[in-house]
Length: 185
Image (cartoon, rainbow, N blue to C red; front, side, top):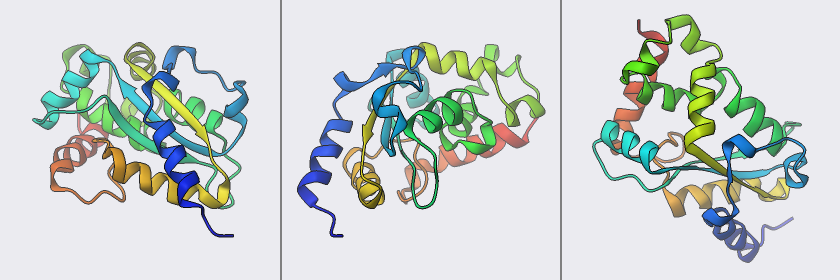
């Protein structure tokens, strides 16, 4: 089945509407859209955006990360990916968590709360920080349109914490910090 470019454009535009985002602290897996596959965007509040911008040494827009849930044969839903994978998951299973860990590891209150092992596993400190400073928007997307929708959203918004499918040397500090964030200490 052909992917309708107008539908994709509308979905990507909806993803970029911060008014659709919920505070991470309010996100629940029982939201109606959360049971479907789709795309999602993470938005940073001003203190988080400034912290990320300092680490990357560049200006950063509030939309910091885009992802998809339910690709291919995966039974993952927007709810399980966002809530279980990103908000409460293992750092090793989430690009977003790895990138944020790499950025936050330089901050004293975060670094003092972790060892190498706790950075690799679940970090309640990171989860709490995400709930305090981030918002998330979810958009249901037909499975057949998922990859195209994510690719177009990445092209449109160029979120700084996405590292795959966005070849850009300005992301090298994120790559570098996140690798050290998991391996060092």
